[in-house]
Length: 500
Ligand code: BG6
Image 1 (cartoon, rainbow, N blue to C red):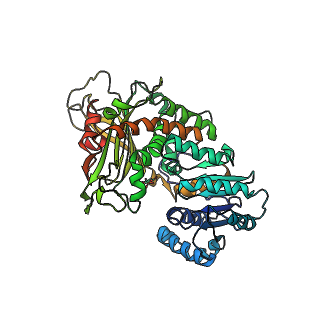
Image 2 (tube, helix red, strand yellow):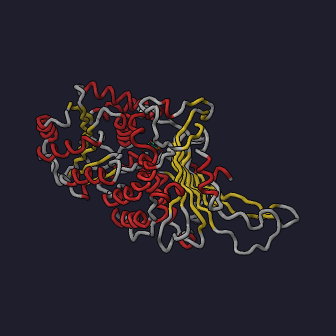
Image 3 (cartoon, rainbow, N blue to C red):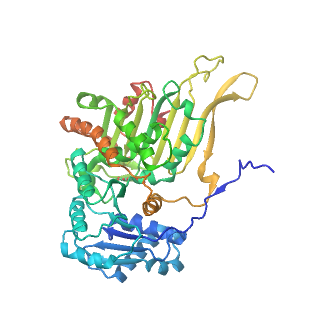
């Protein structure tokens, strides 16, 4: 019997139950907990992965009772899980949740936490620090003083991990004082996305791409993460941060690493992280005068996004009226290695852009000599488009003969819709990342040296921008960013994918 399953959609396998765990959630009433973490945990509970015997202890300053907290959590899960929320499973999940008020800076409160946790030998204990980073030091100090960090403990840190290399170092040293590197789980939620992991599968599960994945075969690469959303309710935070620190330092550089890294020997955490680190360290520095040539920053003005009018960045609540914070970045990155010398990687991200899309476009070299005549004889190179969001598909553009007598070539797409090919529910980023931390798998978390290397590359760009009087270039909300972004790539003879 044939085992060929070419057109058969493959199901996601039903997960086996995971081990029991204790998860201590600092910032338990915060936006991340309500919007992402609790819904993710509930999904895994409904899947049968989280079993009774696990405990989630939420902490925050507010004096809620556990009952009141469960009611908040229920409303959040109902809202964010939508039709997937199962009323009949709520009580079982809620029984795992408890709440304790805690002032992160008050030593006395940690004695109570120690009592609540008790001793559960062999059960992984996770401390998820979903608070402002300026509380990390106090939390770590108090956890250590109360003797609650056991050898089975893991510390999960949410970005932003600092605002530059120096502040990231301080955070890492503080956390490093109470836990070893193998106990620290630094989150970049892009690594938890199924679609991003699929990049690893595409590159290292197929022999086809590896010989082509290099200079001489690849002409240039584009990475776009475009959002239609503005800064929502985070104006104050965003205005201190900007797109370079909020998106490029982490999500876009992580995508670049996965695309550009050498094949790791295994999928073990450090094998993968070693290879990503080499990419970050091989990035050609962009500083001073170069920054103004190889980077473009923009800030949105009023415009129309989709069908709705959108205000400008300077009108957003929490944003200074004369802010110079960038909401858009485009840049040209170069990787000084044998594999990638001479192959530019163009990175672009922004808020209030034309479309909500995350996409990687790998453009290959043209044929060296064309034997055909006609408009598409040789100018159109093959192109691999890997769309990560909102839908997941991989498209390879090739040239084929157009029907008819004449030998005329036309571009056609070989398209694979992964949502169609695999039936079933993929894990959301935080489901995956919480699950991996519970299992002790560090592969999808950033190691300290990666974070340092990423900041070391970002900081000189930031410094050059700060010294530049011009500030970010305006762009209309709903556009693809400032015209200078098109000029950046056009200088090398290319165009952004949406301009083709
Ligand atoms: C976060 C940024 O890390 O990523 C946000 O702080 C951004 O500003 C978000 O909106 C984008 O994530 P996603 O998963 O919606 O693409």
